[in-house]
Image (cartoon, rainbow, N blue to C red; front, side, top):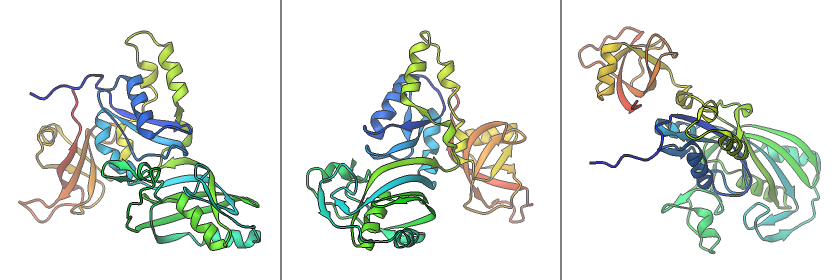
Amino acid sequence: MARRRKGREINGIVLLDKPLGGSSNQLLQKVRWLYKAAKAGHTGALDPLASGMLPLCLGEATKFSQFLLDAEKTYEVTAQLGVRTTTSDADGEVVEEKPVDVSEEQVRDACLAFLGKSKQIPSMFSALKHQGKPLYHYARQGIEIEREPRDIEVYELDVLRIELPFVEMRIKCSKGTYIRSIVDDLGQNLGCGAYVTRLHRTEVADYPTDNMVSLDKLIEIQESLEEGDFKALDDLLIPMDTAVSRLPFVTINDAERNRFDNGQSVKGECSEALCEGTAYRVYYGDDTSGIFLGVGEGVLDPKDQGIPKQEVFVNPKRRVVYS
């Protein structure tokens, strides 16, 4: 018999405003303890020297964390030109110093050159995992791990301020993009070197910055509550279906819900035509105000190849288990 996890069966997402220092996993475990949650997971680590938005999934929301891991992110970064370090940030050792003999126009043009698609080799001081440990774990021991170039895309890049040797930017990019690597490449392209002095994540997918909450605030709330009272903390949770808010949705009735809960394909109504292989949010009810049941994949009806536009057959992929 499987052992039941200790803790509350609470489902939702906390938008943590990560402070500087500490790993994402350390912060996750603190938040899990504050909520007394049976299960928790994060949606992609922020390095210890980075701050900002870190969505943490509690309970059944962990099943949908991959969708946030794959989402685009937005960062505010300050780069200092003229210095290159081993880690491309202030935590590393200085390996090169050069005069900053460039104009603001040259800097702006060099920054904007990163817009669009490209390939990037992840930094050895990133949180990318190798054999279960982040690359920076090996880098701090002087161990170099071979990394494959990754396809990345910078959707937006705004140069906010140039006061040489400092450059401030806002960068909206695809998953797997390392801002430290962009800054290091910027310095190399300008011929003077550069490193990150500040890195702050402001957005993940569509989540608003205003909904972030600090760890200190969560601790303050928890300490003010009576034993067993979690309402004030739970009120900060964002519904777990927000992790998949960009997917089209399907609604199903009573009979179909029972089939979906048992892992069987179901027929539901959707405002979009069937696209085989497309992921759909699945709700029990008339619209998205109903009960979120999980995510399914569109499949062709084995009995009828001619499916009306609003009828969609969905094969369950990730189901919510309500206790």
